[in-house]
Amino acid sequence: MNASPEVICATGLGKSYRQQATPLMRMRELLQGTGDGPLFEALAPLDFSVRRGECFGVIGRNGSGKSTLLKLLCGIVQPTTGRVSISGRALGLIELGAGFHPEFSGRENARINGLVQGLGEAEITRRMPLIEAFADIGDYFDRPVRTYSSGMYARLGFSVSAHIDADILIVDEILAVGDSAFQHKCASRIRQFRAEGGTIVLVSHSVGDIAGLCDRALWLDRGQMRGLGPAREIANAYQRHMMEQHRNAVTEGGSVPAAHDAMPLEQASEWMGRMTLHQGGFDARAKGHGHGGAVVIDAGFHTTDGARAATLQGGESVVLKIRARATRELLAPILGFIFRDANGRNLFGDNTYLTTIESPVRFAAGQVFEAEFHFALPFLPQGRYALAPSVIEGTQEDHVHLHWVENAVRMKVIESPVEFGLVGVPMKTIEQGVQ
Image (tube, rainbow, N blue to C red):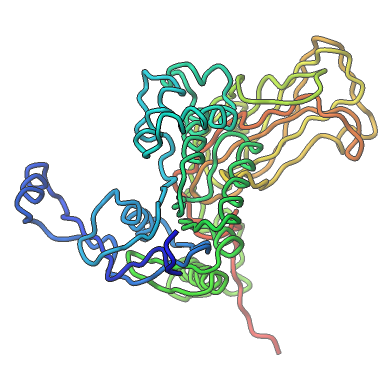
């Protein structure tokens, strides 16, 4: 590696785009270096550096310029102003598997990717068993990638990238690849990379990720740099700012309701109707584990009238149904679930233990049984989520896992008022004098 303590140095780095440019206008701008139409400044010129061996965070809400900066660092787009110099080999973990040919097998794509990254045939042959083992997709490694699920595709993409030599990793959000076990393996690989002296640039809108993982951080807001310094200080400043933005939106210019004007949360919340969640179907092929005795055969959110929902709103009353089938006699089965975000973090969960503790239910082999959980759907930030249903046998403290399904139902929140934190809690603020 280069002897300089700074491995990334950006000077006046900025990017602008022509608004409402036609394909012909973009071609003329490319060929002649000129263009028409007003400029949109996606990223104002900024100066920063990243030191060798540190984890440098970039935080900001959606549309703040994070992705633009990431593409500039990876060389995907060229800057409009300024320059960025990178000392060492940088690898961008952005769109895992980008460039894979759908008709080629995973092995063939891994080989081609290695050649593109500069590895020789002998080195690719030596690393191929490591790539195959890390991806852990079984026989699919030798099948065309067009037959892959999105999770398998991302697994292969990360595995190939993880076995390419690099000095700097540029990561778009914390990796959310496959099930939780594979996510932990990815996180361990990144931690190992840093322990060996590697440098990481982590782009995220998560306060927890930036404060907990990074040494320093850059805060972007609408393409402008709002702060640069110790990660925890920048994360706290960003969170205070987002809280203030939310407070201003709720009070609508500062008006505060009096105590006697209290109303139901459904009427008071400015968040109602502003979070939309799309729910996928139950994936019967999702990876599961357990000692057997029962199989989870269905799970998902339903509306209160019993219909399985493709789209749900934050704050809406929902019914989560989990159905399983006994493959032997069950003496005290417990159905439960964990709801996770894309980083594998457990957001909430429950099970039927307290419901059946005084009168345990029993089922014969072949019998199908079901549990319902009634609650209001939490307000969640934009992103991807997954439901992990399970069936166990025994008690809360002493039980055996019969069947646990990772990522059985995948969901995506496409719009949300939640700008910070892992979950949003709508509140009505009341301020009154106290004598």
